[in-house]
Length: 209
Image (cartoon, rainbow, N blue to C red; front, side):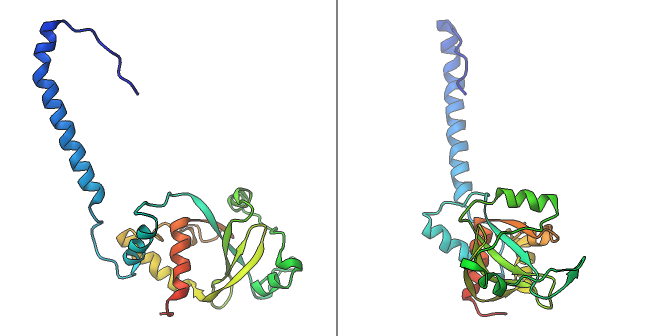
């Protein structure tokens, strides 16, 4: 925002020379400190390996940080039969693959916040397909909105493994520190930031712990 101009006489100009020079020096010092701060690496060590992953991502993107926006999703579905008011709630990723064109309409969402997330989803955005309410919950595949099967993940990524990274990232500021899978556990539809999605997806390349 531009500052309003003010008229000054010659005497005032002379009086202001030294403060103006001092102000310019101060601003230059502050700018230098801010630049040094922006390039300073985050403190602390991570046992989860996310810092090495982050360095690789920054290298690929020219060092730019991804914005904290929700452009990916996590969809929970039950792979095992369970009757609720006479309706079987079972719908696994194999059931999705068996649908015409491997696509289905995602309905039965009752939680208002999950419904809002469903409305916010955009056609073609990718999501993790998550098996919930079963012996070993976790991510089994990738889908895209409408909801259409894309592919299986290269390996099953269990909830226990994701949780271990989440706890580590809460301590050292990693990308999963605020993941809704742990802060809003009951939601069947959850948004993911680009960093969250990319980090979890990178786990499929690692050997299970």
